[in-house]
Image (cartoon, rainbow, N blue to C red):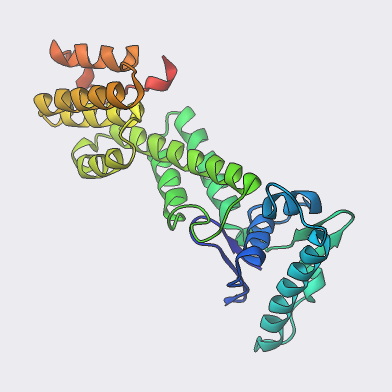
Length: 271
């Protein structure tokens, strides 16, 4: 079983998709997929499907959704040319009070993403910015779009989606920081402008763009990025930029030579 939630839901057995088209079974599968190889309580599945009031038939309906998913798993197993695959009940396992979706360990894309991200963070802490950049880039390369983009999410999935999206943004931030330390400021400019258009109030990314522009000999543009960030923060959130971002702006105003050093980055989250 192969499981990928880093984009539209993709769950397949030997390349044959088992993702249903109906909304509620798809949501059930998404819950099992995002926690692949881990126990998912029946109560959590029902809370995800019926946020306000559960119908009297909720438990029966859940059993029918599980049966529907098992039929899809069984259908792909029967069609496989290499012979029979594990029985559906051994893939979508019933446990006391809940279920578990068994997947091949190296085929759970979210797990691979998290392993690569962890390797990147370790390399960064050790000062190996080349390895950090490479691991972060590999992790980001697994992302196919918004997490569970084609699934109707409830409270549990929404929390998981927000957690993963925040982790992905953090990995992106750290990859860019690593690339800045490697002197890749020219190559980052176009990417950073595109990212900031989607995250206009992210001060860390703004600082990265300012630093990349400054090191590219474009100080006035770097200062203009600050002014636009400040205007957005004031108009949308009623906030001034953080002290760290203001210090970066002041350093650029006085042409601080230290900003040109590759070992200098400006991580606003640490201030």
